[in-house]
Image (cartoon, rainbow, N blue to C red; front, side, top):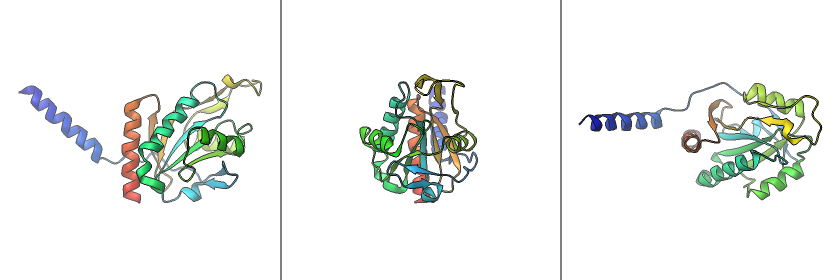
Amino acid sequence: MASLGMLAVAIHDLADARSTPPPRLGALPDFTFTRQDGQPFGSKQLRGQPFIANFIFTRCPTVCPVFTQKMARVQEHTAGLGQKLRLVSFSVDPTYDTPERLAEYGEKYRADFARWNFLTGDYATLKDTIVQGFKISMGREPGAAEDDLLSIFHGTHFVLVDGTGEIRGYYDSADPEATQRLETDARRLASEEG
C-alpha cells in the first residue's frame, strides 16, 4: 500500500513538473551576427519566437559532431512546430567558420535553414555574447597555434530562450533526459508564444 502512495506522489510530482513553466534566468543582450547565407541575423529576427541555442565549430574533432547530431534530432522531433521554434548554432571558431563553411556544415547535418541558423562574426563580439550573455564557456588556450583545434573550448549545454530574449533553461547535451526536457519545455514555450 505504501508503494501505491509513493507512486501517486511520483505521478503528482511529474505532472506538477510538466505544468510548471521553465524559470526566467536572465535576458540576453541584443546581438547580430552573420548567418550561413551571408545575411545579418540575430535577436531582432528571433524576437517573438523561442529558440534553442548551441555552440560548435565546424572543424571540431571531439564533441561538436555529436552535439550537432543531437541538435539535428531536436530539429526532427520538433518539426511539427515549424518556425514557431528556431534553432541557432553559434560558431566559437568564427575566423575559420565562414558563412560558406557553416552552410556546408549545416547541409551535412540536414539542417532546415528556414528554422536552423548557423552564425559567425567577430570573435570578440561572439565571445562576449556567449560568455556574458548566454553564460556559456568559450575560448582558446593562450598562445595556442591557429591549427591547434584541441585548444578551442566551449560549453556543451543547449540553451532555451523565449520570444522576449529571456533564457529559460540549460540542458546538458550528454544527458538524454535533459534533451527530452528541453523538447518538452520548447514545445510549451512555442505553444504559449505562438
